[in-house]
Length: 365
Image (tube, rainbow, N blue to C red; front, side, top):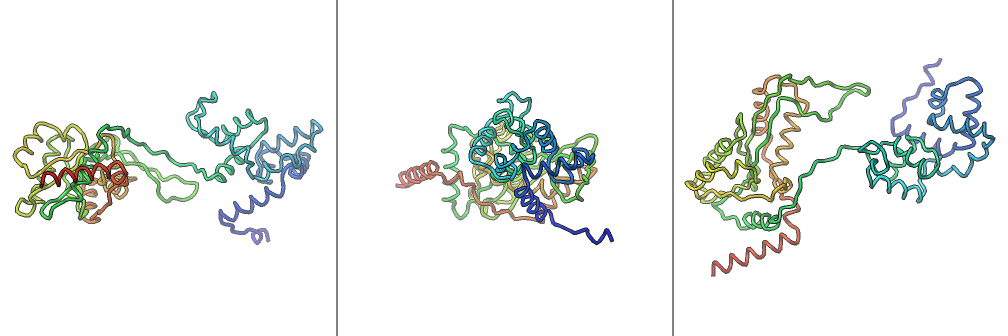
């Protein structure tokens, strides 16, 4: 009965068996299998599928046979055919990966396995399949994944600003609080992300047609992890003022003599209307982060959770529904007591904090 020969092998088991097969059967012995199947009339695609090799291996074996050089496909190629990576090839491959394909004349911004194989052939004069390059990359500890956008972190006052924020946190009085604030764009157009789906299928997320936006202004309490927030239709100084007024109510003067609000250098935080309001509410003080340094603001991690729980792959058709999801998430899933980033504890920042402490002692004296 044909069905009785079908076995269920996990992906990891299949990978292990393929590795053992390729390690034991390469070069000359693989060429014999290929030539016999070619003589029987099978196509290169069929042979590659049956023998678990690449089409280039089929063509290489045929070329060697016709050139009378079949014996050349023996031990000289065994390290490469076996899937192992010699130190010399490793160095060549790493040298390629450190530069972009454009440096070698390719009209590409990223290396693919096929492009790496073609460039290795140019430099080493040996044919490697894309599958072999992929195994080697995994063997070297390389993986295929998305890059991450990072901001330009080059503020000349970076250390001083970080030290000031850390100093305020470490010397926070009993009747004082410190929050990290920022704004987040909420788009009706879903943010696309990973999710579970059947193999061979792609789950489709329908776009809304015309995108709509709302803006979340929020502040994260450094000690408790509580989030105070408000949502507006425009990201203006008015939205930030609404957040400041909400903070003034959440931290009343009867209980909090001082409230520090840490913000980035976005224009709405320095608007004239904001400065005028702060002049009338002197117990609230703004502390500014270094420019282009989102890692210094722990509320960014809370915003990441907003995207992860609410906006990524969502199926809402109205912006009001999506905003309701965000508000419910902030109400139900908190608090978020994140620790400060390691950039606050570098040797330079620590030295600047100690200097501030000395200045404080001199003033007190």
